[in-house]
Length: 101
Image 1 (spheres, rainbow, N blue to C red):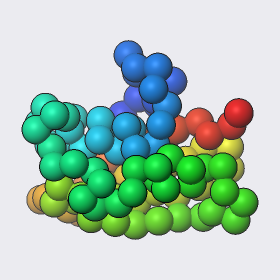
Image 2 (image 1 turned 90 degrees about the vertical axis):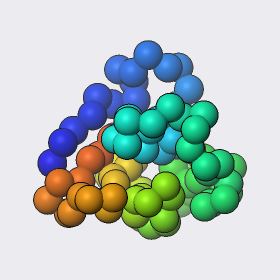
Image 3 (image 1 turned 60 degrees about the vertical axis):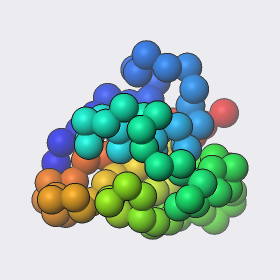
Image 4 (image 1 turned 120 degrees about the vertical axis):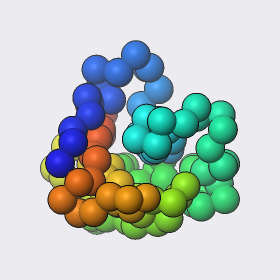
């Protein structure tokens, strides 16, 4: 599994889950983020951003830019993983985002 640095260590101060998904897909596919199709074509970004705060949220899976994006609650953080576009479960890429206040 290829790990990417946590959102807190990235050069951005934007900790929105929707932006983390765009960033991860862009880096994994070596594509400029502005060249990706709009995330809202796959999922409502506002809904995605609200997930870490929802009681009972465990996981969500959706397709975006040729990848299956899986968002999973892992205690105090949220893990975003990608599968597809030539990858497999053993070669997936993930990024953890701290969802604590």
